[in-house]
Image: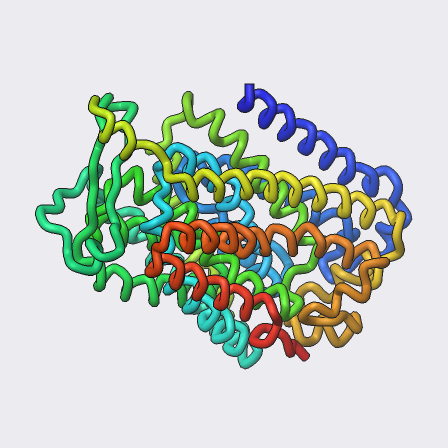
Length: 325
Length: 142
């Protein structure tokens, strides 16, 4: 029943949004004369952005990655917006997606609040530093950020390609910090029809890794799910399902702090931001429905190829080589 | 499955409260975003920055953009809520404030449980997020 209501609410918002975006299409033929540097009227890009983000939202769910990691490299590579605005909106996109997914994951006890809280504190504090550093570097020379972003995206694509996450890591003995914080729990595995108990190890090292994760997330405006999951799963020994869910929920906290830095600097332009956020959220809702019939593995490989291309394109753009158009 | 095991599988009370607040905030945020965007694009309220001007300057850095458009940074948008473009910040701000609201509820719960470690962690997170939101660190784009 609730599912039906959410679905119909989603379709209502989608219809309303298409209507809103079609208003200027009908009414602003005269605006075409007032074309910008791109040679397109103002309403062209928000429409393209909305459709693009709708598709991106679907693909992101099917590929098991966050929206931000696809949004920032692709939009900065193929849209005419400055990297400052792309990073600001990218964080809002990742934040909105994480906020929307959070309630379901928490209720099903897949995302674990006790695990998320200490990790989020470290990541969010350092994502503020990352955001400030990113804006400082971008003010010096935006190409530095483009090149670093490109290198990071290529690194992420490699990580997605080679990392072999473990469904249920074996943790023989919980360390003292994990024990003191009570980092453990249980969840019901629908596939295996059993309850899985878990606890963490190497907790201190894991917490240190989130310093780096926070810095990168803030600096490039990327949701950091690609980094959260390997740290939680491979390093700290958290089961894959709990890692993925807690990571998604974590983004709602980590990205909030960095998003505020960008928003306070004026990096979130509503004309770009709103169609991106709404498009990606609706795309994610549709993606969840398609997930049942899709072949996620194939899509995941496609996304890795796209990320490689987007990363190389960002490096190419930053270095001003022009090899990739 | 024994009772203890069943209890372990359940989400904690604070998790459920957190989830309930989040779901209300997110849908309210999205609804406000779509509504204010409609007001913005249809021109019901005048814009501070002309729509046709934006594509000519969105390729410039944020400092230059703010200078050209005479747009405020930090919380300066509050004084421009009568403008269609800045009206959109209500929804954006609501989404960005949701985590702080949820954490305030968590702190209350943890204090009741006398769970001091998590009370301190949650309080520190509120401080971090509030500093970020305040604009002390993030403004000054000119």
